[in-house]
Structure formats: C-alpha cells, structure tokens
View (spheres, rainbow, N blue to C red):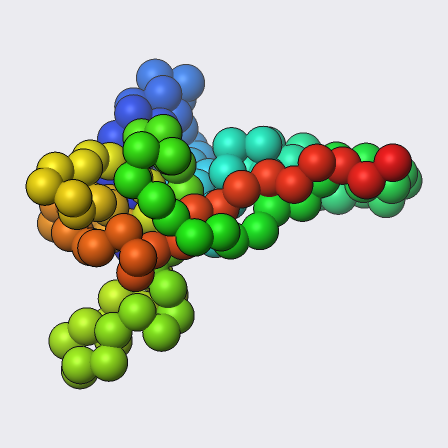
Length: 150
C-alpha cells in the first residue's frame, strides 16, 4: 500500500479480529486499507468520499437501483490564502512548475495543512513519508462543492 498512514484504521481492524491466521482475515483488512488509499488519491472531499463508500457498498451487495444523483458536484478553483480552511482538498496546478523537479508536483492533490510567510503547506495524498510541501498560493487550486442544480 502506498497511501497515507492509516495506523488508526489498522488498529480498529486488528481489534475487530482481522489480520489473524483466519482465512481471508488479512486479505479483507488489507483490502479495506487499499480502498482508503485509493479514495485519498482521488482528491475527494469528505462528502464525495462518503458517496463513493455508499455506492461501493450498495453495488458490492448487488443493489443496482442507485437512483439519481441529487447533490452538487465539485470543481477546482483558484486558491487564495485566507479564503480556505485548513483541511481543504487542494491540488498543485497541472501547469504550476516547468523545471524537472517542479513538474513532479504538478497535478498532485493533498490537504492544506498550514500557512506561513505567504506560503501554503500541503500534505499530499498517497504519501506515507515526508512532511508538508511548500507552495506559492497562485500555484494551487482548491476543490469546492457547487450547489445542486434545481
């Protein structure tokens, strides 16, 4: 698994009896952890993560009567310091950097964790190691939910 640190989830699974010698216990627990990593790597906000989890659960049970999507959708918007709460889902603009080292950051998503000296600090999704990465705000975008259409 290449995702964020899910120690708290792993501890809950262990307490519930997974990761044992029982057939498929470890496979089930590992699958749950992998699903967390996939969700985190998509840059979804909490509402959309819950939607994915609900849809997956319904489809996995064979319930294909999902109804219509009644909620709004999300879009990327310019990021401005002071306008975004810590914990907001952000991404490095796909054209933010042109140098070989900088281009590795283009398009990565993460969470806005701090601001200092006019810079934004982002903890990337899907990264186990490493701290927050520093970026100028104009190189970032924030994910915002649009209102549901009537």
